[in-house]
Structure formats: C-alpha cells, structure tokens
Length: 165
Ligand SMILES: CC(C)(COP(=O)(O)OP(=O)(O)OC[C@H]1O[C@@H](n2cnc3c(N)ncnc32)[C@H](O)[C@@H]1OP(=O)(O)O)[C@@H](O)C(=O)NCCC(=O)NCCS
Image (cartoon, rainbow, N blue to C red; front, side):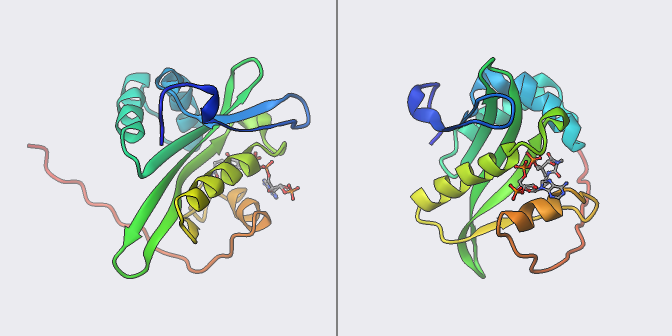
C-alpha cells in the first residue's frame, strides 16, 4: 500500500485558500518534517526515531501514512491510518493520528487528509471509520463532527511502563 514515490501515490490535488495542495503517501524522506509536526501534536520525536517508525509502518500493508504537501514540496500535515480487526466488532479503519501545521489550519488540509484515509478504507472494503481524540484537543471535536463523525463514548486511557530488560 505504501510503495516508493510515484505519481500513483498521489491521492488528490486540491486548491486551498492560498496554494495548491497534494495529498500523497508518506516517503522515507518525509521523516524529519513528520517529526517536527509530531512535536506540534505534543509528541516530540527525533528525525531518526521517526524514520525508524515510518519505515516499519510503511512496510505493513494494514498501515498507511498520508501527507499534505504544498507545491513547494513543504509538508504541512500528516495522517496515520490503520486497518484494525477487533474481536468484538470486526474490521474498521482507525485514524491513529492527524496534525496540520498551525499556520495552515482552517484551509481544508485536515479535511483532505481525512478524505484520503476514508478513500483508502473504502478501497480495502472497510465499512467503518473510528478515531479517538483527547478531550483536551478542543479544535479536533468540531473538526470531526463537521466531517460526519459522531461521538459515541468518552474513555479513560491507561498506561503502564514495563521494566526495561
Ligand atoms: C484538527 C485539525 C487536524 C484540523 O485541521 P484543519 O486543516 O484546520 O481542518 P480543516 O480546515 O480541514 O477543517 C475541516 C472542517 O472542520 C472545521 N473546523 C476545523 N477546525 C475547527 C475549529 N477549531 N473549530 C470549529 N470548526 C473547525 C472547519 O470549519 C471545516 O469545516 P467546513 O469545511 O465545513 O468549513 C488541526 O486543527 C490540528 O492539527 N489540530 C491539532 C492536532 C489535533 O487535534 N489532531 C487530532 C487529534 S486525533
């Protein structure tokens, strides 16, 4: 699903307010910029760590990462989506993370990234989208609702650090 760079990886070209935008599959050379945007999301990562993660994700058929790039080539947003199979509810596509550069919000970049993952999901025969959003991410709630997502529940998230061997 995430092959090397080629025109076939381009999902959509659109004209936001200021500049043409291309939605395409992420490539290894995007790692540095993905790391910068991950920090905006609240998850700082080194370019090296991001490159490793991206490499593993791009190697798995059930994972995909899209980026939104300006005509200049600058990446202004990314979205990681995943096909999940849950014992209790079957297959679905989950948005694992999405972020748009603060300087480029409100111009339809996020909408186009979500449209790309929905198209990817449809092509895989998936019938349901899911996304979990922190209650503190206030801007993401009206965003998902505008895109047709309905809130179904509020959860607590738990973590446990395992001893390092
Ligand atoms: C949420 C986020 C991805 C939205 O990206 P964006 O490019 O600004 O969103 P878009 O411009 O595509 O907006 C799509 C729709 O959502 C609405 N919307 C977006 N942000 C909104 C906000 N803060 N308040 C109200 N509506 C909003 C837009 O009005 C638009 O509706 P319209 O097309 O019908 O006018 C972006 O704000 C972001 O990166 N936030 C920080 C990270 C985050 O919260 N990620 C989600 C975690 S799961």
